Length: 169
Ligand SMILES: Nc1c(NC[C@H](O)[C@H](O)[C@H](O)CO)[nH]c(=O)[nH]c1=O
Ligand SMILES: CC(=O)[C@@H](O)COP(=O)(O)O
Image: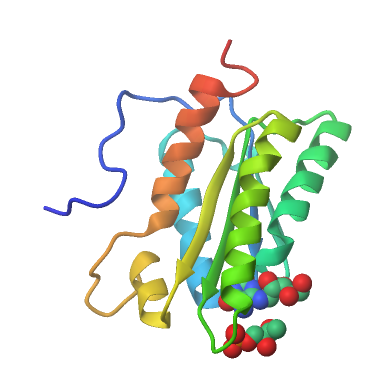
């Protein structure tokens, strides 16, 4: 049995009343598509309605913090505010320091975003040293050595919105 991963949740959740935003980068599209689909599949299995999953994309992971903030702003302005947002990207180490700077900046910005927007931000950023690591974590490597991390992010979104989101208390 695999040790790593979110595993069983602490209780059952019903996401039927939740509105969930997903902002994803388009870099490393094959991996991103699998992660986004995994997150949506889990959200749907936990009762989130399709019409309440709001999907938007940004070019690369560096754009995730701003794209996430503005999607939250937009939904609020439209009178359809989000309860939680999942920010999804995949950084793969190249030959310069590009990866390290973006990984660090985006991680800190997404963490800090929560205080500004007052909804939970789910950290869906893979920071991989190789393409193989990224494929495995999206559940699409040949040997299926790991689970699709997008599913964990979907589950984390419903749990966090239910316990600590704007409608929680
Ligand atoms: N190298 C990766 C990037 N780089 C692009 C940046 O995120 C950004 O879009 C650009 O610098 C314009 O501001 N993005 C990823 O998501 N993944 C990478 O591996
Ligand atoms: C700035 C870039 O997108 C690029 O030159 C970074 O290169 P690498 O991914 O090999 O570090």
